[in-house]
Length: 221
Ligand code: HEM
Ligand code: HEM
Image 1 (cartoon, helix red, strand yellow):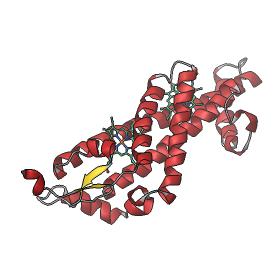
Image 2 (cartoon, helix red, strand yellow):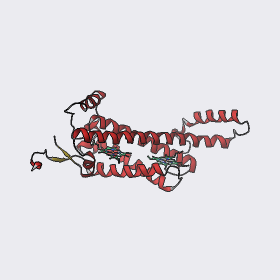
Image 3 (cartoon, helix red, strand yellow):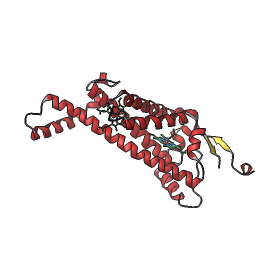
Image 4 (cartoon, protein in one colour):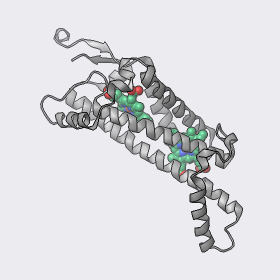
């Protein structure tokens, strides 16, 4: 009986968005929990995250209507206005991502890309493996010598005998490892905020956004 009064459901999320999202969830947590293992599971989970992120960014330009960045990337004014409306009786409703969700998606994709890139650099420097191994001291390493020199100097002060070339090399590893861990941790915090945002959205709009990310269907109004 009540189905007649409900606004119709429409297809909002295409299969690439949905399947990509749930692959991302599994691959991200697999990578997170295997970070200390030095195993191939971590590397392949990381590659999976990287592949989904690259595909999703491309899809943001050529994908279906609500998958495009142009559909959900708004200015700070729209974000504040949406967040303010959440505290009123009639929160603004969007068929695609809301402006706050859109901002979070940009932050997540950026942080995931940085985590993957630093992971690839670390793999190249530490194991001489992965797609970036052949680049050697390419342009991406250009910031490393500054850090490496600083660490080597510090070490020389601490221990006069240990500031060898080998020591300086492992500092390059340390640099990428620190950076990789930093971005992985930032991403985890963003994911926590993302899930909190989704739950708040479900509550304020009285709609199951998680189910929508599975079926692709959302309420029209
Ligand atoms: C978003 C995906 C990823 C996440 C969340 C992630 C997370 C982590 C974490 C938490 C660590 C432990 C850091 C520490 O305690 O020092 C780690 C280490 C590492 N990651 Fe990743 N990572 C990701 C992608 C990658 C990729 C794509 C690669 C390269 C193919 C990679 C290669 C490594 C390597 C070589 C280590 C060091 C392992 C060791 O020596 O103990 N990671 N990662
Ligand atoms: C189990 C935990 C998670 C749940 C329940 C969840 C749920 C959702 C939902 C409901 C949306 C759609 C939001 C909307 O209606 O506007 C969404 C979007 C998104 N989520 Fe999650 N998410 C989770 C974990 C993650 C993780 C771990 C990542 C990345 C590491 C992630 C990245 C994204 C991205 C990039 C989008 C945008 C989707 C697109 O347009 O392609 N999510 N998520």
